Length: 215
Image 1 (cartoon, rainbow, N blue to C red):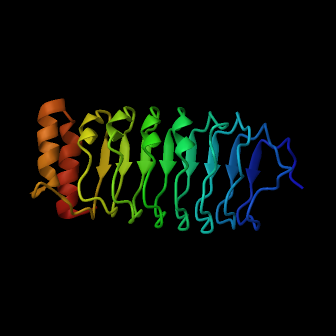
Image 2 (cartoon, rainbow, N blue to C red; image 1 turned 90 degrees about the vertical axis):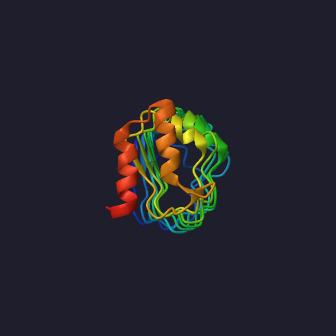
Image 3 (cartoon, helix red, strand yellow; image 1 turned 60 degrees about the horizontal axis):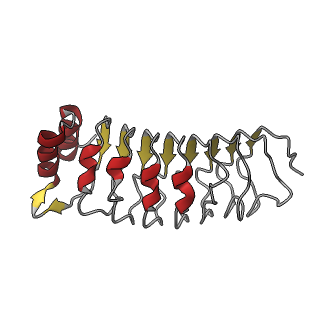
């Protein structure tokens, strides 16, 4: 039995497919269930106004993430190594306070909902190892606070042009993405964008050097 008065739930290796229906932890602030056997946290919506942190990393049976409509204050969502994850629920766009989204090595994830571009406070987005993602959202430039974009080894052939509007970006990692733009290397896009919107030279050169020399 899980108490509905919990503020912290830390249960690595959680053995069940779902959280119990009777579990309605309205005071929960942090949920850590790494390496669990969970397939979906909850069905429908669950009012969790105080929840700020979810870590389900390496929960290899997780195939869906829930409706976030009633979790408006979430700040960090870690789904690293969730290799069965097939989709990100479109309601993720309501998480206006989300700062970090880590999807590293979620290898079966094929796409991101366009609503992800509404994450106006997001600073870190990690998509590295999501080798089936073939396209970044067209409006990724709307993520005005984004500072780190890690997308090593994803399947995109070209980045969206709006990436040029990520003026706060400090780290851009696209190692292993070998696409071209109209037959020209990606570097041509970044150099042109730097001239138009004053992308910081620091990350233009970071990208160029990273492609040539690696980490």
